[in-house]
Amino acid sequence: MADYNESLKYLEYASARGSKLGLERITELLERLGNPQNKVKIIQVAGTNGKGSFTAMTTSILTSAGYKTGGFTSPAITDITDCYRINCEEISHQLFAEIMTEVIPEAERMTDKPTEFEVLTAVAYQLFYRTNCDVAVVECGMGGDTDSTNAVANPLLSVITNISRDHVEFLGETITEIAEHKAGIIKTGRPVVLGNCPIEAYDVIFRKANEKHSEFYMTDIMLKFYIKSLDLRGTEFSYGDFKDIKIHLLGSYQKYNAATVLTAVEALRDAGLNISDTEVRDGMSRTKWHGRFELLSTDP
Image 1 (spheres, one colour):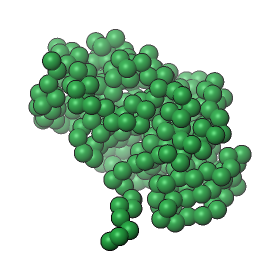
Image 2 (cartoon, rainbow, N blue to C red; image 1 turned 135 degrees about the vertical axis):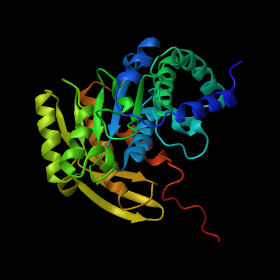
Image 3 (cartoon, helix red, strand yellow; image 1 turned 30 degrees about the vertical axis):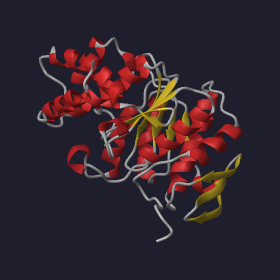
Image 4 (cartoon, rainbow, N blue to C red; image 1 turned 120 degrees about the vertical axis):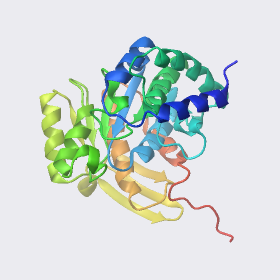
């Protein structure tokens, strides 16, 4: 029987290898596993902020629409299994350990062995394939082009939530340099959604989308977003043709994430997914994303 504690020990062992950017190791590991990342429809999400909230809302909408939906976010808030969700529910220790028993032997056969995050990424793709997910939303760990999640050949959709200065020691000092890394998730002929971002980042992403012949969807807060109410119970708003949407994720900044999610829904509909307005409203309203700006008690 697969052992959860042994899986955790292996991750500690792998963490000693440090953090290394590049796709060579993850590509080899996934090839050894049969390239599960190319057997599931993947929505890949990069950005400086909002990736987790975007993933939570999008997986909730897709689950409401009847799709078996995977989600991968990092880092974990509680157990390592907090990184992995199927239909918005955290996976069990046993299931995580079972997938690790498939990944570890292949990782150990490699000459240049994978890092901890590369192992976790491989687990995500193997998990979504083994559990027959219809679609999975996968959050980049850092950057985009050389992040291990970027081993997907033909994502259903690429999403860049926003861009500001982050991880400057790896990604560069300027918004333009950082945007170039994030734009690395855009694949030839595959649609891309861009959230609210500075003009210099927009220029980079739009140019890359044109180079890759990718349909480009731009989130428009200024013209399409209308807030009806915003308080500690959440936000009620409309965005373009999406009316009377409610989210319980707190913070005025969540309007940007929510608008990007709804722009992504438009792109997913164009890609052939069946998502009704009722399922959008239901999924947004049901979204939970613990451990962030969250109201825990009113008395006291």
